[in-house]
Image (tube, rainbow, N blue to C red; front, side, top):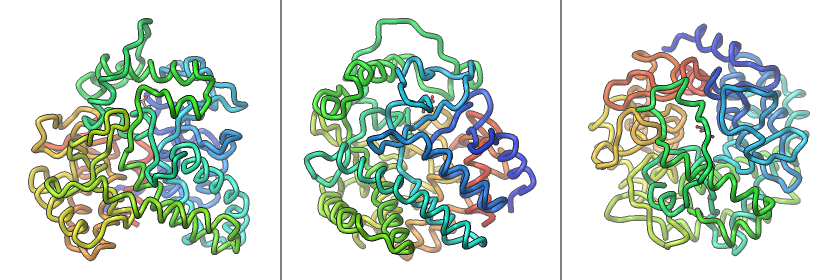
Length: 418
Ligand code: DGY
């Protein structure tokens, strides 16, 4: 059980009219994957408001199909870097990278669970062209050679910004030589946030895209950071399957052959990321060709995508059992046995509820219902101890990062209490 009244109050408090900011101060704009997960919470409370979340996001879609990771609808001094640093030129100012493409999955839930069928049909018809363009953008711009595994150009694109999986490729990015003032540290303890050495490189990449005039071909060729992020590959694959289901519902099949063929390429290629020794899938640094061999929650997301074969799924389930033995508050974002594990620092160990939901969903699909339920109970403990925080200390379950966090309230309603 969760405190549903409180969860609803958080969504209402963070509602900025058509979009929900993740939390006040720290994240005052619309973040793409936060917004998609938050729509699942709105669905429990107000269907029309849930659809609005998606409509507002797609209004910020770039002409080439990209859905930016941040839409800066209104000015706010409490966040850095803002649209000026990104060099945004769109009508709705935005960042120049994307985020894990979970929208089609969220919209499928919205469509299939909406009670107002007419409104759902109308919303789906409006959203489908943008959704299809977004998925085409991923496959076209981020896998131009058709290898089946899309590239990511920034740790922020992974949504798992500070994961130790990105340490090596980010370490090869030059640091910027200009000074700046971070705003995140006025909202959250520095022990729970990325370090300056990482920010210096995050910002170098932001500058780099601007200098390349956002030219996708040049960036693909020359980006100093290019990673096959297994988390993005998996979330995209699952979402494409959901998109195909939505196209079928709407009898819109013009793009189905393209989407099916993109999925088939990924299914053929995913095995190259598998590690027998670690029992999970590793991301790859495309500039060195080396696997990024840190066991993080991203490495088991192919369960969510149904991309694992039976043997791989069983091996990942056994890995997850041990992972849960090591920390009883849901799956820590980095395995506690890793020397890089830090229980409180952003994506280097703490627990995120929406990722636990994805993994629990995957486990249930592969017949691991008992383990899926154990993961759910362990995740519930975070809410019992901490409330609706951005993430939770993997050792104690205490809340970390931003408080009154939209996606935590939303996924708690959708999954723990749905
Ligand atoms: C941040 O600023 O920490 C965000 O995660 C970037 O998207």
